[in-house]
Image (cartoon, rainbow, N blue to C red):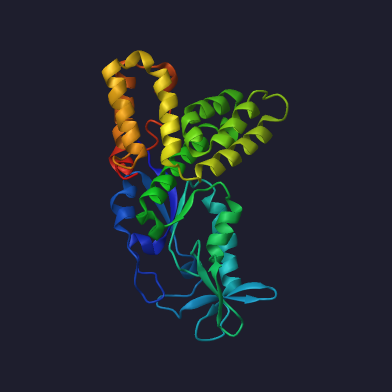
Length: 315
């Protein structure tokens, strides 16, 4: 299986590019995700010529906008950072995801301190300059901070989005776009959509019912924007139960009375938080393998990412 191109802050790979000459090596990224992700490292501060080691920098808010200023001085590195952004971002068009370093005035995705011109903190809900530009240029791209990947649900959601977006990029986007490719993508991800957002799920079906009403590329752009919006929403236990009940309807001939009883018991146990998602999901997958239903064979909801990542053992 080919690996998926994913951007990452260089320090998370153990590269000593931090302002203090250190790194923030993520063993989860290099030891687990690297089996499936082809990491493309970027350190925008190093690219901007700030050097290692270097003075610490932070964001300051001026009437004309945010600037990247040295914490213990007045040196302004905003222009150099903008040059990096302008040069690097076009090269990232093929990425399927990005993992950023938290608390960085260049790479931080959330909760970045913003200072006034005198260097005093005025709020803590800023975003690093590079991260903000990345997310603005590629709004569909799954982006997450490394520290947030310690949360079971956030980790599972991010990785699921990366694999779904990779499917889109490989099989639908660009010159691969056809009416058939778009409909087949929707078919593969229907139960995922149902679990993530039933409201958007019910919007997307009718959108594909008349693919001649507008240029296909226009419909596809609107479709994938809504699809990725849905996928950013964490799935509740109730929503998973709803999706699994829909799956059971297709598997009625594959389930004997006792098997159905056990499956319902384990689904309810999952709903109560007594067992992880993998338990009822494994029972569904066993039933599908025993008496395959063609419609379910391609459903990504049953296997949205490689099993050995163990993500459904924790949610």
